Image (spheres, one colour):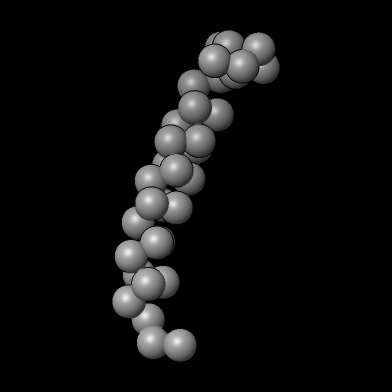
Length: 34
């Protein structure tokens, strides 16, 4: 954990949420025709 994250559960939640979004967006971008 980084020093600024202590006592701030929202930051961790947003970090995990953005990570999941990034992982989910990869297959979608791959499936789109170019």
